[in-house]
Length: 253
Image 1: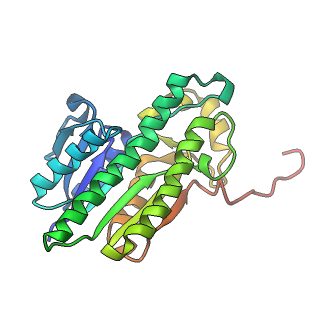
Image 2 (image 1 turned 90 degrees about the vertical axis):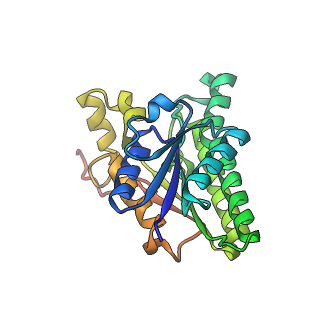
């Protein structure tokens, strides 16, 4: 049986890296995004124009993927998101709502649409098993300056992961999240725009480098594959030791 996957936020660097890896492993893919042109080239994938920060958009994405695959996707990955770096007092209402829509609403409505599709398949005599992968951030687990809105959104995603795992494990749905540190993607390009910025960011990570989209893609592929068959309700840090390790520094260093 061929594995199938719907990736929302399908035009982003992380989504493309994961799609390339899964494609090489023989998965059939659908990628959803707000604008069809940003999803090109199609690479043989089903491209779906849908805004999954809305319930209607998420339902459309899952329905079109299910129609193409003949059943709900084996896996759904919500890679949609946006980055907002600003202190609380400098975050406008519009910025706050856009941040929650891009990060939290996409996760909630994508999950709701996928769970609903699996439940309908189960009622029709099929399997309710599936794999749902969301993305959090190191900022949800440790205080990081200028991350108030996005840390709140990502923290809510971590709570959603545990709640969904509790509700739907019995039907065979595995729900997990990856909480990455800073990864180099088009979304973060401005943060790594010069050598001084790169050095300052790299110095924060015990393993001596920032993340790459390929790092997240490899972990995601593991969780979606047979290696992750007994993992659910987990938020896995992918951060070069940022949240767990404080290297010993020599005085004067």
